[in-house]
Image 1 (tube, rainbow, N blue to C red):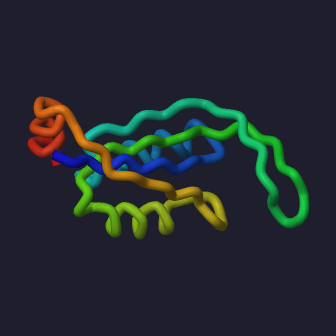
Image 2: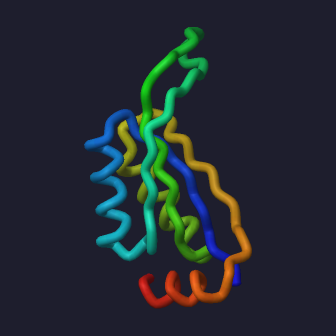
Image 3: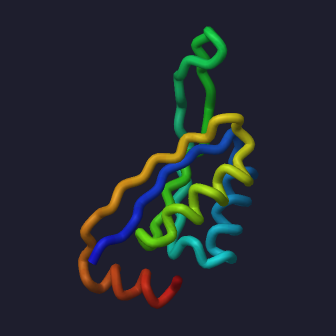
Length: 101
């Protein structure tokens, strides 16, 4: 009863919503959460401080490679954050996720 949780970011709410809707339409995700965050990171020898939108994707483990390919194609970043982990799920949520996608 494992589910895949993948996290990426986008630079604007508009871009994050676009990614989320496409993931759902393409049946790559059962649920997508978006929250505004403030990030600091090094880029081209400078410390960047920026508002971003974190996108948390709930999906099936077997969709991992398809999700990574999709996010690389659609991301507005040169090097998108794509991190993921498999989690054990409660049975009702697992059943729901597998009915959706």
